[in-house]
Each structure stands twice: as C-alpha cells, then as structure tokens.
Length: 230
Image 1 (cartoon, helix red, strand yellow):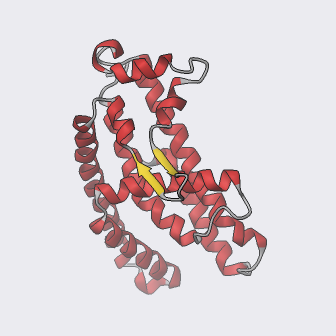
Image 2 (cartoon, rainbow, N blue to C red):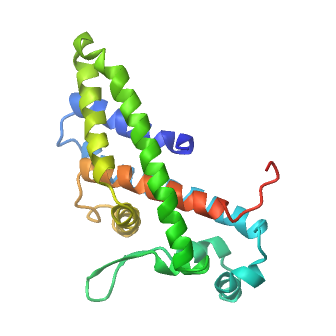
C-alpha cells in the first residue's frame, strides 16, 4: 500500500540521524523541511496523476456518459495535459486577501461529487484502521526489545506517537493535511529561501495524515478503472 512512498520514510529516517550529528544552525539542517515538503508533495502529485491517467485511458464507464466535467475540462486549454488540469482542482493556495484556501470539492466533482467523496472517506476509514493494525504489530515486536538499547526505545516512542495520531486522525484532518502540503510546496517553489516557516517535525506530522488521504484517493479512482490483470 505504501511501498511507492518508501523513499519519503527514508528521508525522514536520514534526517533523524543527521539531527544527532549535525549542528541545527547548519544550512543543510535549515533546508531539510523544504526538501521534505517538496519531496512529499511532488511524489504525491506524480502518483496521483499516474492514477488519473490510467483512469482516463480505461474507465469502467465511458467518460462522456459518467464524467461530463472531465470531458468539459479536457476541451479547455487542450494543449495542457488533462491530468494537470484535474490535479489543479485540488485547491491549496492563498487568495488575494491572504486567506488560506484548502478545498478538494472541485476534484470530487470531476468524479461525480459527494458520492465519490463519500467513497474516498469510506476507503480512508479502512486504510486508517489497516495502518493502525500495522503500527500495533510493530509496537508488539518492539515491546520485547526495549531493554536492548536506546534505539529500540526511540523507535517504540515514535511508533507510539504515530499510533496516537492515527487514533485521532479524521478524514477532514487528512484532507486538509494533504492540501496544506500542496500549498506549502507551491510557496517553496516560488520562494525557496523564505517560503516555509514550518519545522521538519511540522511537515512530518502533515505527512503521516496526508498519506492516508492520498492512498485513499488513489484507491477510489482505481475502483473506477479497468485493469488488464483483473
């Protein structure tokens, strides 16, 4: 479920190692949050666009019949890839008044609106519980190793924190976490030096919620897609 995002977990792990050995005021450490937000948001975007393209190429129901908004969108600015235009419907930006806009409804509308959103939320609940089962399994394994060294204690504490986050993470929280990452990625892309005030830990917390959302969104779209091996 999460294999294609393993590099993000690796990036977090390498930061944790570097944090213990590199002074916090070093430029590399100050850039870590920007690297993380760019890496997360860019990889999420890439994978979601791949999922959307597979759907466009092989929908279970014809686009012209079941997804008129996608057909209309395809004819707007025809030189721009359709997946780019679809992805833009996931709104994460600041308006002219400086207010934060985080809204996925226009993306849901491409696939039928609230019915699709409800399906994403249902899948989210399943994904969250499955992820919680994984974390509980890891905690059970680490419990027997707590006396073996500080690293096991650290890993146990980290997994315990993740368990707490999973217990309280709602669909709305995960949706906003993803859109918040998209917003921050755009800010960094336009102003790398001053475009981000969040800490590495802030971005990491967004990530653990957002990955539940993006995986659920992908699964919901895949349910509407014909796959040759199924």
